Image (cartoon, rainbow over all chains, first blue to last red; front, side):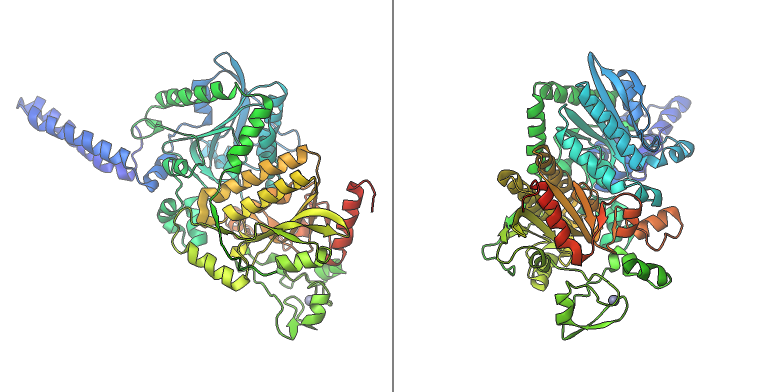
Length: 325
Length: 287
Ligand SMILES: [Zn+2]
């Protein structure tokens, strides 16, 4: 059974009530059809109300749902012949990022993504999907390999951020991310990025510079986690809910800010309720993206990425400068 | 000498280990200035003549953007770009416009970076200098756009590009737009690099977060000033994550140098000379 989130409780309560009436009706042989129909209608409305008008914080909860499909789940639905490739050839294999080669229908591709664990044991192995520099360097190695063999790159973003640890700093976390941004900018094959869960900070962007960038409806993408923002802005991590609202981190908000291309609609209640169906919805958008991008030449792909990112930002001008000189 | 200072006074609190949030700008004002490190008192005039470096202990006071430009560029050579660009409030973040206005008044700057072109010992270049007095030097849309435009100018004019970073990281109040400035500056730097043009990064105190994890770290040459705080994650965040105390010199320029992240830590007094050498070599040895 799917773990219920707090904001979903009224739905479950109503469902329980309907089930109760149904069994009561059977048991006592009383006709309660009318009452049940009325409640079912109410349930339908409540579900629509709840899932169609989800607050940012509700979406954050769904994005963090323990059963939410991960990169490897989507790889299993979307691709065939996947072979995972390991290691950065410099230090280690970081299991917080997975990557490899596969077939996407009849197209060879390289797939890379943040990978969090499904349980505590796996999460420890995968460092909760928070990469070290070697993760970004593995990703870069695979991207350069994709470029050599002219394969499109598909990246799944799902991280609370790059790991903030001593060893990560010693091995150049900043440089590893920075290098990826620059190299992804110049990659001569199509790059399609999809935020599938959480997308925080440079840790997400480190595999996120694409020709097309899409987000699942209940994923979030932000300069920092809501908790991190709250603690910096208001010195109070418990104000994360407020930060999630103020920072405009939901897929519809990020789309409105002109940062992403498509919001991929989720299964009602969230991707975890039907991962296979969710993968199919990703498939539709991914296919359209690749069809469009495969028409572009190497130069056009780099140029398209340049224009895309060049246009991000909002600023204005003063008439009289007040600066000194 | 500086090295000696570090080892001899190992127990004393170092400016380099001040947590990001507490970074103070002991910008010397008044007739006399007291070094925040060794308490040595100097005439402010003398201190400024000494490039804002303590004569006694070698502490590098923070330098603002125009002081930096004046200390490096040939007199009268600087032409500023996009001086009138200012921030908007794209997320309608409460209080953001007031904070910007306050910093504009306080610093007489329009934003946290000054860009333009000029010459260093007659070598022409495009330069960007971040200023940590304005919103902690954080990068929002304006900082990203000004730097990107400066890089584009360097491409257009076939000039080297040099940046002095000083930043607490991303501009929270601009959310995801702030994050995307990392990508924006990167696409521009890639074009500069593909053209075979020179990019020098000089990291000054402090260079952290999103700025550290983008242009600051990918110079053809990565330099830093002594004692500068440089790192991806904040010290406090790391300590909370790993539940372990960090070494005293953690995330200083010297720490990064030791771990192979920097080409050279350069004292301010030797900066102009070193940069001139690099520019000369890249000009094929021509003076
Ligand atoms: Zn001193």
